[in-house]
View 1 (cartoon, rainbow, N blue to C red):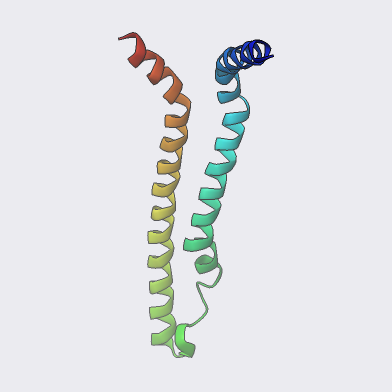
View 2 (cartoon, rainbow, N blue to C red):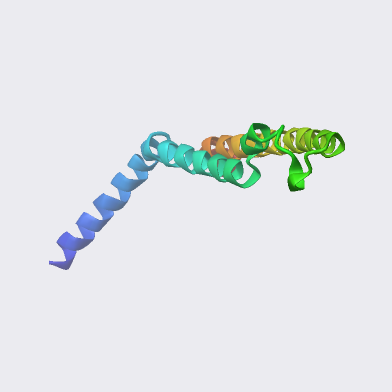
Length: 114
């Protein structure tokens, strides 16, 4: 009985080793893309550059005089610019994370052969 169990476990182990690269570049890539998409979504919810852009002409702190409106527009433009730059940097970081995910198995095989 234990011989059959050992054979089955050994067979499953080798099949999993053969299946792993296929999974990494199919189902694993799908999971990694979903994870990266959620990272970008969370950053968009946190930074909300679109919300600042939508309210660009709404006076801040209820100051409706021309000085208050001018300062509000200037501050919101600066906020939109800084937040858009932060989103672009975060998008680049997420792209690097995804590229590292894709290159990791190749790197491991390379390091094992060198």
